[in-house]
Length: 129
Image (cartoon, rainbow, N blue to C red; front, top):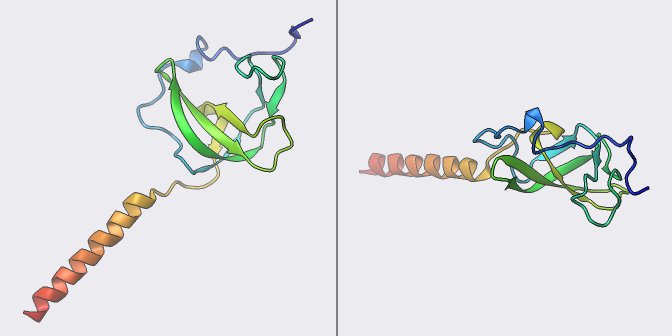
């Protein structure tokens, strides 16, 4: 038998929760996340049989990249470290993940620091005149 008929596969294309994702991503590159449900091979990973557990629920990883499937479904490429599984990078949907830390946009943070510094220096120059 090629496929175990008892394995529940999730049809991410036609399922009710597969409508167009929000315009803004829920997670960001580098953010620490936890897997909320087991990820099994639905046939998209060619080196394991369909139904093989690819990553167990509760695994902790980091968002590596993100992309779109069929231009409407956001997929996060999550890198899981220290897990004894056949692979350590898995594609996940938003509903399969939970943030383990708040996202800090380091670029925005750096811009804010530079802006505050420029304003402080401008003020000092004006006082010296």
